[in-house]
Amino acid sequence: MDDSPRSPADTGRRARTKSQNRELILEAARRVFSEMGFAAVTVRDVIRATPLASGTFYNYFKSKEEVYQALRDEVALAVRPRLRVARRAADTPEEFMAASFGGFLEAALAEGPRFSPRPDGALRFRMDTPEVLAGIAELRADIEDAMARGALPPLDAGRLTAAMVGLGFELAGGLQGPDDAAAAADFAVRLMLGGLDAVSGEPG
Image 1 (spheres, rainbow, N blue to C red):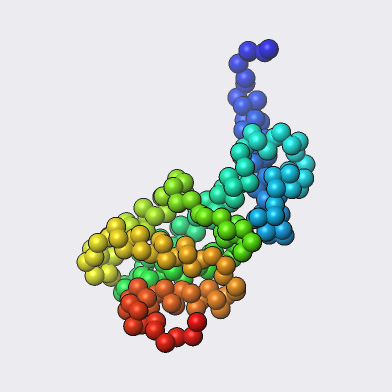
Image 2 (cartoon, helix red, strand yellow; image 1 turned 60 degrees about the vertical axis):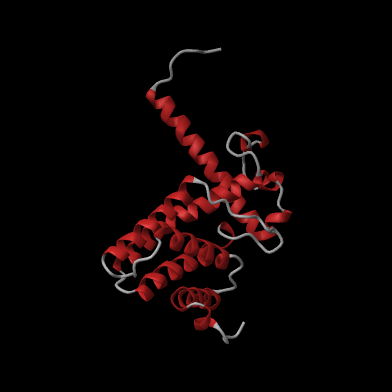
């Protein structure tokens, strides 16, 4: 066994290879989840869609569930800057809610199977990954900022954050197209601003 120290060039090459292999697995998973649905996909299906040896998969992920979560974390990481900019620019409660739900549901629709499982694979979304927790913390900070500048009324920021997160993620599952995403965002905004009276009597 060679215990000699690796050169910086060797270390750099190894890091690039690891990053490339991980992305190959994620890209393959995007395709097979989209084509087959989460429930029907096996780890072997994901491996077959890559040029990698079967054992390589388990150097990066323990299961297809871990791959799926990594894909959703990518979405959470990508959408956060846009949401923050829109929320920080909001001057009224309606603008703040529209920025939050509209931007989030648009991203969920655009990312499709990376964000939401197909109906045949009811996988619950983990809320405890670093990317998701950071996004939730940013939402709370933006809520507190909006309250401080009068864009939101004084409320319990923690409970409002929890309510918005829960509603947003539940509505994001199974979006059927841009019109559906827009209707879901409008429903969320009106529900948050006006309660049940604001959404009663609308079409299902």
